[in-house]
Length: 89
View 1 (tube, rainbow, N blue to C red):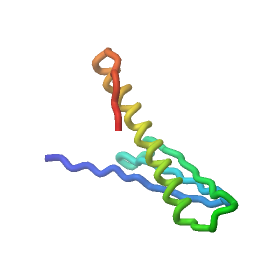
View 2: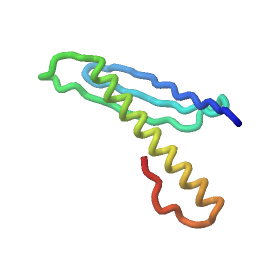
View 3: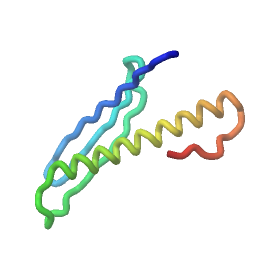
View 4: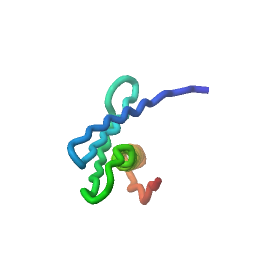
């Protein structure tokens, strides 16, 4: 049995009503893929920074997941020389 660890680091930055998140996947100590997400608070809403963090992070992780699926599809196609129809979350 082989065990591997892939590490995802999420960095969150706030700028006024905007929150930006970057989810970085490190495999074997090198950056492989970086997903990005953002959220914007409606100025009429009360301030709840945690919600902005959650939304931006979820979007960054979703972006990362889609990029990882795309990379897997490309790797499969390069080995099989046939198009991959669909890889979904």
